[in-house]
Amino acid sequence: MNTYPKDCNARKICSKARAIFPNRLNLDNWEFHEMTGTDHGTDMIIEYIENNEFKSYKIECQIKGTANIEKYKTKENISYPLDVKTINYALNCKNAFILVLVDIINEEVYYITIQDYFIANRRYFESLNKNTSTINIHIFENDKLTKENDNDLREVAKCTYKRAKEDEIIKI
Figure 1 (cartoon, rainbow, N blue to C red):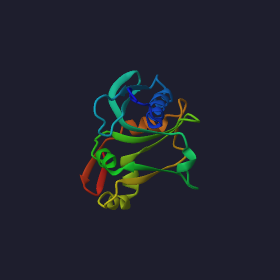
Figure 2: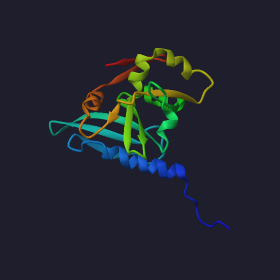
Figure 3: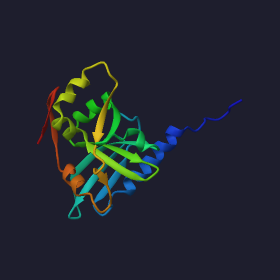
């Protein structure tokens, strides 16, 4: 008879991913805030510190982990299925919203800004209205976060967005 809750592999992968991601941030430039409570899409908020000042440059993050990154690799990129409801949530965020994909075996962190992805690929808006629960988001392998190379992420933190209509996002 089982008298205690059982651990599962998904929990272990998620916990490892949530530990690896902030470890890849240069903490001289970034502050991170774990989200608590019900998860509506944002797992963590990271805030860019510019010239030792907090200027409210924030990025909302959805963190996903995998123990088998090869499963998602194609010839051109990494193709990861993300829930449509999470995508819609991201597209309504005023701050940048990134999908963070963590390879927990090699401890590599990949990311993509969801709003920029949909601005660049307007045809994907059509997929949001179809009867599907996920859409594959394509991350380039060179969009990898390291402590030494966070310049692109710093610029992302300074961006704001507005959802103009159901099939349009505007970068402000």
